[in-house]
Length: 71
Image (cartoon, rainbow, N blue to C red; front, side, top):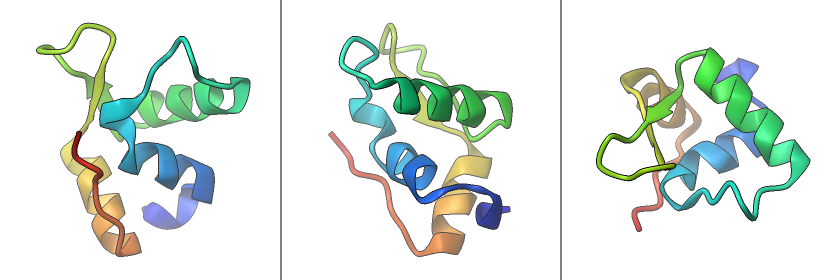
C-alpha cells in the first residue's frame, strides 16, 4: 500500500494537519488530489478547509515508519 506513494505524498500526509491550500504548490495540490481520491485523507469536519488522515493513511505511514506531525 505505502509503496505506491511518492516521498512527496508521504511528506504531505505527515503534515496534512498543517496543509494550507492558499500556500500550496501545484505539486502539493496534485498530491493532495491523489491522497483524497485514493482514500488516504479526508476533509476534517472540525477544521474548514482542513484535512485529516484516514485509517488507510495512518497505516501507510506506519508501514513507512513515518508519523504524523501534530499541530
